Image (cartoon, rainbow, N blue to C red; front, side, top):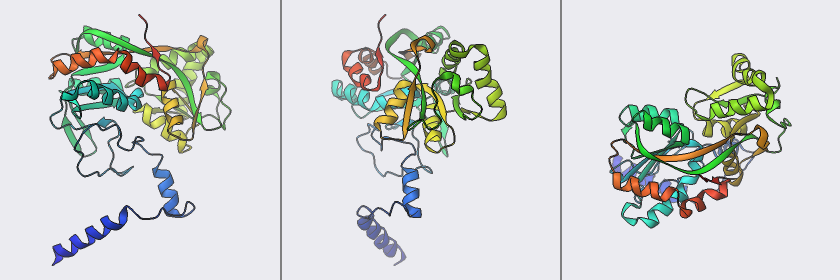
Length: 328
């Protein structure tokens, strides 16, 4: 009887849950819903290419694994990709699957900072998120060109390194730029709280520092990355591509330097985010690349991905987010 009662309750909830009216926007429940809408994952599960998804238990912010995509059960291709272009992978993986239907729905990929991905590779592909531990050994790693080349020399990756796109920096701010950030020099202001990538994990930190030096000399770079860190007005991220826009939307910081593609994604998603253009003379350009992991479990699929990622088909998926086409 008890089990039948639970079943009846579950059926009733299932029957009414999908048609339940949204709460009034100014009510406590409405404000919770609005706040939760800003939380990752921002693609509503769209980056998951698995065909059979089963029960969806995604409930931001308490149960979500925003930077792990697809099914980890018997994948045909595992990709470790720098997280700052996470939003482009749905269309990339979909197009790859259309070209290679034998692997459609069997691509598992992670979009974490490169320093964390390297740590995972060194741990045999094992990682823990929340209370879940899993193992997914990479077939392909995707990172900035100099990082990929260094990993080849270290024996983590196998040549060749395939370069395929470029990106430049921008200053991400809240909509309408309420703190009136005009450029990199303003990041030294005492009234501007910053979200900046931690150099321990994020390769972009070195490129941002170089841009700060171009704009305001070593004094500005030291102010942003040492003095303001010490006083607590620069918050260092561990997952920059998630934390920076979220902290901006939550009002915790006023600015953060990211890649321009990240800001364009947030704006396209309708989030209250904008960006301030950094002049070419102060900017830094990154080159994105890919290479096969040493001892890749699925070398045939990995080679197909490397052929695909530098193709016209692939660049068509990247262009809407402001990426440039790599030219040797």
